[in-house]
Amino acid sequence: MADLDRVVVVGASAAGVTAAETLRREGYRGELVLVGAEKALPYDRPPLSKQVLAGTWEPERTLLRPESAYAGNGIELKLGSAAVGLDLDRRTVSLSTGEQVAWDGLVIATGTRPRELPFGHDLAGVHVLRTVDDALALRGDLLRASSVVVVGAGFLGTEAAASARRLGLDVAVVDPLPLPLVRQFGAEVAEAVAALHEQGGVRLRTGTGVAALHGEGAVSAVELTDGTLLRADVVLVAIGAAPVTDWLAGSGVPVDDGVLCDSTCRAAENVYAAGDVARWVNPHFGGLMRVEHRMNATEQGMAVARALLGAQTPFAPVPYFWTDQFDVKIQAYGVFPAGSEMVVAHGGIAEGRFVAHYLEHGRVVGVLGWNMAKQVRQDRQLI
Ligand SMILES: Cc1cc2nc3c(=O)[nH]c(=O)nc-3n(C[C@H](O)[C@H](O)[C@H](O)COP(=O)(O)OP(=O)(O)OC[C@H]3O[C@@H](n4cnc5c(N)ncnc54)[C@H](O)[C@@H]3O)c2cc1C
Image 1 (cartoon, helix red, strand yellow):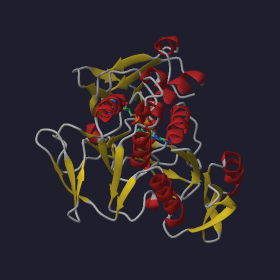
Image 2 (cartoon, rainbow, N blue to C red):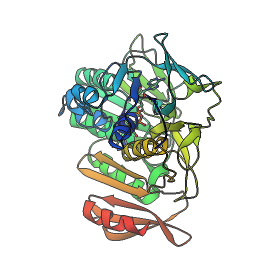
Image 3 (cartoon, rainbow, N blue to C red):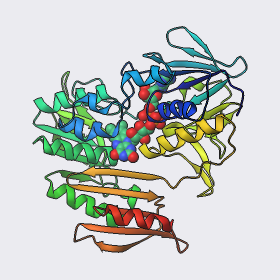
């Protein structure tokens, strides 16, 4: 095992917490500090757009661990303090509190932050959704609203639209692409997602962008690029997220759409990255990959802890993702490149239950299940 006395993990969420716990499980006995920009105890994000937004879960239920688990594991929590700088030579992290924290092993797990529109975010009622505070603020506004416009028909936007319909709101989803989730899963599955949302009462305004947000102090309407005005008491901007790497500027850690890492997730000597922020060489697919999915945060958090302790094993997962929308669970293993061939292998799209295989050069690279959990798990082996 590598000889380390003090490991600092920056980013106290799924990847960071897993990395810290795995270090202990693997026998690391030195000091262990977990730094987090948010004041809240580490929590899980997937329920925010589903159960928390719909009001079926209290936010406390999303906590990853009870507070006592950290002390019990010898993990020192520094919450409410963001890393603002990194010095690789002196091996220190500077915090927003002015403190300098020394390390001889470092895990970068700062995740992503939502992208914003170039206009309108100063109006009340305009939201993004990443943190528990975001979810509670959005829910508070939705409960007082009658109409919401969701900008962006990716995973987050479509999940939030379904949750808002469950709250009884008039919901419109706007996206310049022709169908929801088309970039992620191709046209056939995207058409099924569109039908699901239309049956659920969501108005899809695809193939058009947002030109402006209107309102006096608070948002009241969304103007589309085709000139249409949509009434909106609330707007959720869900147009993707960007890796949080600004605090690494000038440090010498390589950054390009995430922290660039080798196949063991190593970014510099004794410095590793995990979760949404990490862009590493995945030997299973033979190229750089950055995965913004919950399961990857756990698996990569485990992998970097072992790598810090001396394991030389490449991190070569088959990515997994799920999304819940209305009464449908979509589960996806692997990758879904544009131009891959999609074949329905079990069930049928019209039946509302199917497993689809995505092929590239005759090989299965992705498997997607639509309300068919057992079968999709079995077919995962084909990748
Ligand atoms: C609303 C929502 C719903 C989702 N639903 C699903 C789903 O259904 N299925 C799925 O697979 N995935 C889902 N995801 C994605 C999943 O939650 C992420 O992949 C996962 O949270 C990534 O974990 P992470 O630890 O890498 O990063 P994050 O969860 O982003 O955590 C990074 C942490 O680092 C902190 N931080 C940032 N900068 C600093 C700094 N400078 N100093 C200190 N701390 C810092 C942040 O405050 C944050 O707490 C969802 C995400 C969201 C937001």
